[in-house]
Length: 275
Image (cartoon, rainbow, N blue to C red; front, side, top):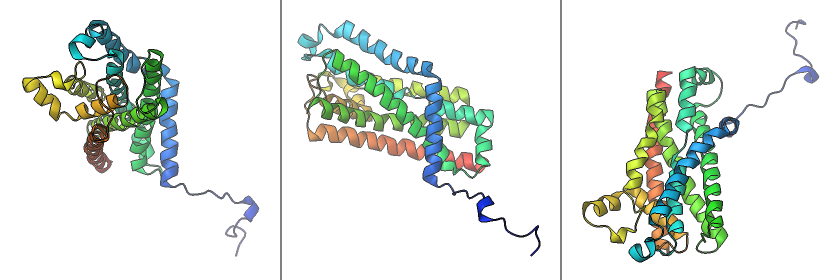
């Protein structure tokens, strides 16, 4: 064996540990979170819009909510609406479509990184955003005198879990659009989908006071049951904390996630075939 072909001594070898799927997901999740932290101004619109509607609704209907709707604490009644609103204001698809448009997706595809990890890392980064928004709004509710059913910690954690589940499901909508179209403009408009779904809910008054076609539309909207389950975790909302209400909310959120994750998977397969 010649000197040119002889193996290098063990002390001079570079021993690299092959990365696994979990390592890829962790690395890309960390990248997504760092990108969010580098642009804290992106948090302002995500919180300002829900807070605006929260304050306006309380100012407009807070004083008449008791005699008209039988709601003792209208701030408590509106807090889950603000939390769900903020959780739907995610930018996962926006960051992903910028990677696609700028060519970073193609460059990353040439590396040994598993492609599914590129999408999962983006969604987990959005989970960080949803948790941040929810915690801030939960603390705001506590400062305003909102109290949680089943103990402060248990009720707050239940609302947080429900919100994160719904928020990640909604984030996958924008991710699916980003993967399917590669268009920045199309991806940025996905938030508009949430508006009709939000207004076709008992966001302003209890469902029992609704009538006609509007009540029928509200009853088939899955976000209605997510919202009512969120209210079940809060005292003085007119929605009793019971297993049936909470179960319907989590089932609706899981069904919503199953649908949106399926759309994301189909869009990802299309993007992978495109190279």
